[in-house]
Image (cartoon, rainbow, N blue to C red; front, side, top):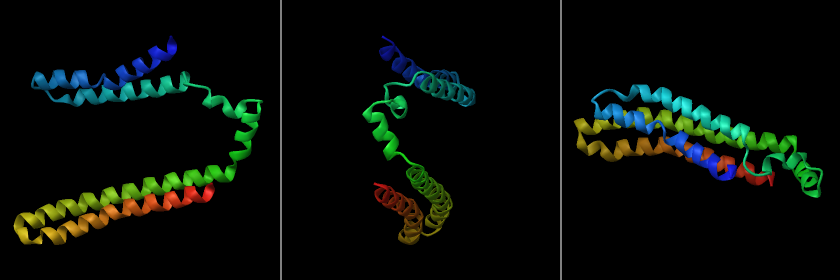
Length: 148
C-alpha cells in the first residue's frame, strides 16, 4: 500500500507550486511567493526519497548474497572517481556553454536588429557556444566507456 501512496505524495509535492502561482497570476499579483513553495516541495520530495527508498537496490551492496559480493567486486574507488569525473565533465561543459550562449545570443539579437544580413554570422557564434556542451558530453561518454 505504501508503494502506491508514496509516489502519489511525491507527485503532489512536485505539482504543489503550480497552484499558488496560478492563483496569484489570476488575482493580478506577482508569483514570487511561489518560489518559496517550490523550494519547500523540492526539499520535501528529497526528504521522502531519503527516508523511503523504493526497491531493494539501495541495500544491494550490503547484502551477504552472491549478488552483494558481485556488486562489491564491481564497484571500486577508481570506478567511482571515473563516474564523478564524467559527471563533472558534463556539468561544467554545460555551464560553460550556457554562459557562452547567454552572452553570444544577446549580442546576436542586437546585431540582427541593426543589420538583418548578419543573421548567419551571429548564428555561427551561438552554435559554437553550444558545441562546448556537446564536446563535454562526448568526453564523458568516452570516460564511461573506458570504465566498463
